[in-house]
Every structure is written in structure tokens, then in C-alpha cells.
Image 1 (cartoon, chains in turn brown, purple):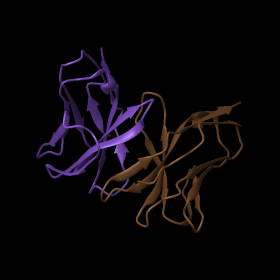
Image 2 (cartoon, chains in turn red, blue):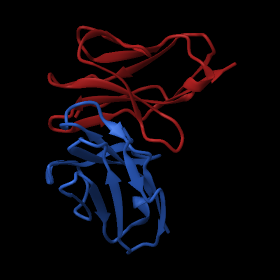
Image 3 (cartoon, helix red, strand yellow):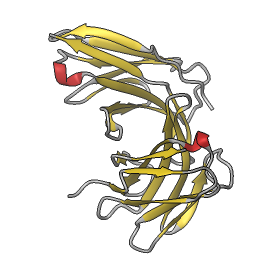
Image 4 (tube, helix red, strand yellow):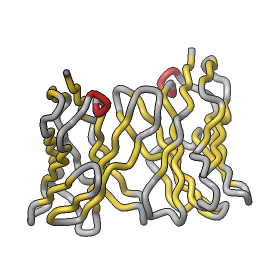
Length: 110
Length: 112
């Protein structure tokens, strides 16, 4: 399994862009990179998934370099409601060989 | 559509007891997977069921088991509870297993 490492915490202010980088040096060829958001007393919520290059949706962007050994989740113009724990997941849901990062607590201040 | 529901939400047991947790997936979803979340080990995959069959299994001892019914509802059972089994148990459903996972709110189990 890929070992997945991400920062423990990050602080930001409303309106700023937050970038969280996840390291996964031994990612396998078939592995995807998925990011989840989790609030207290709730299950994780899917944010974005990618395999290579850049993926963008209505809430975030995911940047994956050519070597795929890391990935960066970008949250544009965060608000107080974006305060949560963000998890990086590497693996596939075909065989469920999954490696979750320990989570990054993002705190957004006014 | 209603989301993934899990019951009970909170549970207190003592060492040696067994426990059964229930998960109802989103209507139409046939795959249900289970995860354990603890402060020390983070999120870990337990097992995945599809059409009543266990398709994938994580690295947990045999005390952890599960099953899925014909209506896709799933249960997981933990026998001979240990203090270290205290955790948030999450289930997630997908239409076919490899798509976006939709998580339930979890069952918080405390073993005393």
C-alpha cells in the first residue's frame, strides 16, 4: 500500500486559498487520489478525485504532477464553514487496497 | 434520496461482549463498505459487500465480520470486544463498488 502523508493542521482566513499537499511516494499505477472532508460527528464527504494532471469541480481543484508522488488539494476562497478535517486517500475501489492519510485539520478564521 | 443511515449512533459495551451495527445504503446502491476510524490509526478499511457477497477485506482479525442482505442493508459484528475496538465505525455505499463513496454518520462505539 502507498504510504500517505499530509500535514496535521493548517490555518487560514476567510477569502484565502488553502492548498493541502499529500505525499504518496509509492503510489501504484492503478491508484487514484481522492479527497474527503469530514465535520465532527459526520462521515467523510467526497470532495474530488483524480488520476493525473488537474481536476476541477465546483468546490475544489486537485493538482497531480507527472510523477504522481504527491497531490495538492486547492480550496479557493475558503469560508468559516470550510473548517474541517481533510483526508487524502490513495488506492482503488476495485480491490479496496486503500491508504488514508491521517487528516489535515483546516481552521478558517474570520 | 435519503443518505446512508447507520444505527445505533452511539453504543457502550464492556470487554468480552459482542456488538452488531447496522447500515442502510442509499436506495439503489448495491455495494456497502465498512471502515474503522480511531484517533491513533485513522481511517481503516474493514470489508466491502456487493450483492450479499464479501468482495474485499481489510487487515482486521476474524472477530470482525459482516453480512449483507438482499435489500443491500448490511450489518457488521464484532465479537469478544476489546478496549481497542472503541472507535467510530463508518459505512459507505456506492452504486457498484468503485464509484464515489457516500458515507453515513457512523456509529460511535465505546468499550469499557
